Image (cartoon, rainbow, N blue to C red; front, side, top):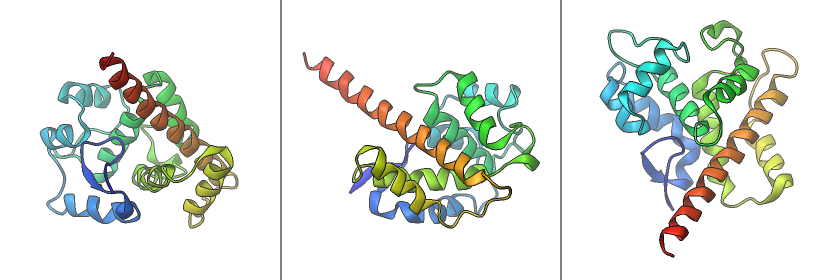
Length: 182
């Protein structure tokens, strides 16, 4: 089934969500993406991306190119921005990875967080209720290796919040479409 990959403008097959890492790796074979390419993929305005760089939410591009880690962080922020303030989004990411400007304290890198979320979101259509979400979260994080005790629990909490927000955004869009038909 066709779907829009969460936090992006990219479409793909929901059944291929477990291979999202391969799709993304192929996009970066040429050595990074330009601001306009990142803007096109995320649907974010270039000035928003530049503002987030200036505010320290992600590192500056190297040679005017964004690497996969930076793009995935932007996408993670983009997934959350619909229902959280920017401060709440930074707080949530900080809960998992400490200081956003310092990658040495990260419990999970931004690419892994995004890839895990895509796998979870792909299953969200087929799962319902908190218990099913918990089972899916355990399944998709089973290969995660904790750098410190308790890291997996933090990862699961963040993914669950991200999924709740993503679902809320979808429901809001559906309600707005219904309102437009009145």
